[in-house]
Amino acid sequence: MSDAGTLHDAFVDELRDIYDAEKQLTKALPKLAKSASSPGLRSAFESHLEETRGQVERLEQVFESLEEKVRGKHCDGIAGIIEEGKSIMEEDFDEVAMDACLIATGQRAEHYEMAAYGTLVAWARAMGHTTAAKLLQETLNEEKAADKKLTSLAEGGINQEAADAAHPSEEEEEEMPARGGRGGSAVAVAKRTSRR
Ligand code: ZN
Ligand code: FE
Ligand code: FE
Image 1 (cartoon, rainbow, N blue to C red):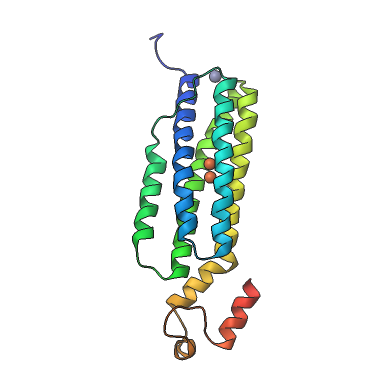
Image 2: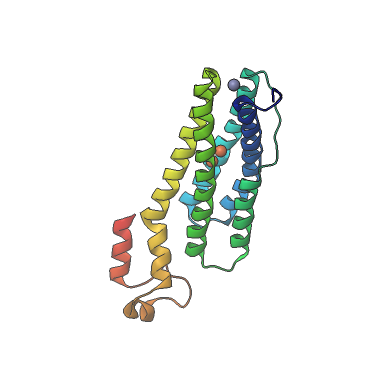
C-alpha cells in the first residue's frame, strides 16, 4: 500500500506527457504553416511555433524547480490529433476550405493543451509548487491566446469565404471564375470586404 503513487507522481507523469506533446507540436506546426494559404493563418502558426519552443524550455524549468529529471513520455493524445491533421492535409480541398480545416486541427491541439495545463496548474497550486504553478500558468495563457487567435481568423473571414465557395448563390456562380471562390459578384465582394 505504501508504494502506491501519489498525486505528485501523477503530476510528474503528466508533465512528461505534455513535454513530449510540445515537442511533437514543434514538428507539426511548420507543416500546418506550410499548408496554409492565408498569410495571417500562416503567420499565426509560425508565431505559435516560436512560442511552443519557449514552452518546451519553460517545462524544463518546471522539472528543474521540482528537482526532477527532464524527460518526455510519448503523448498518444496529441499524436492522434496530429495524425488526423496529416490526413486532412492529404485531402484535395480548395485553398480556403483547407485553411478552415487547418484551423480546426490547430484548435483541437490548443484545446488538448489547455486541458492539460489547466489540470497541471491546479495540481501544482494544490501541492504548493508555486514556481511550477506560475510557469505553467504562463504557458496556459499562451495556449488560450493561440486558440483565440485561430477563432478570430476563422470568424474574421476564412469560414465565410470557404462557405461562399461551397455554396455560391446562383448569380455568383455565373460570374465567378471557373476555379476557386475568391472572385464573385460585386455584392459578395462587398460583403467580404466588410468582414475583413
Ligand atoms: Zn508535488
Ligand atoms: Fe503548447
Ligand atoms: Fe499550443
